[in-house]
Length: 321
Image (cartoon, rainbow, N blue to C red):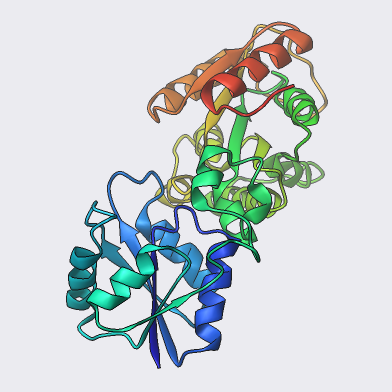
């Protein structure tokens, strides 16, 4: 039996998974169609990727959206043309399913219409991501969690601010892997190579993803893979394409750049006092090109935390107590 599940999956949630698993348990083949429209801020390819990872035995495809949700007849014709055959059963949890299946001259099977098993909808998640976070699969959480990324030159308080902000938001923070990696070479003479920076960038990103899927919907990052590009330029005079490619996959919702107006503190490993201001400017110039919201946090630790919390509320609308 060939079955069909169709939806926006915007974003996919546990209710969708219940529906798809239900169809899979009663079918020989299940095609899941993900509606694509430029109006959706989460690309269809990403929604397809999530669903395919969650349901590897389903056949997840992308279908162009008609932007006419109530026109079941048009959707039936559109679907049949896309598939090239008539499915044996349409599984859905929505009222449109009956008419949609009728126009395709096939059977409709309603699943958990009253949301008894999984009491959630994508509309509710979009309205309040953080309150409904528990209804998302870890695969989705990994990519969807909001990222506050704190960057800055040496001895500008990035780690202190990352810890303070994460504690105030009651959420995890992601340490700087590059610092741990570089500290490991202090006992020997080490010449930086491009592969060192590829390793740092990819590992930083991997750690971030692991922490994101166990978060409450937001994480604070003490640097990210994209920042590795700047540090590679600092130590090797250039950023290589492979490092830039890793950073291109970063998710950033807000940058906080720590100011360089505070005194430089030598911890025994720092060597950038003479170029600290130039590094600070490099971060600003790099981030401006991304068009991602950012602030420059200045002043005392308390003042920086206050500025950061205000920015969180302003730019990503996270509930701050």
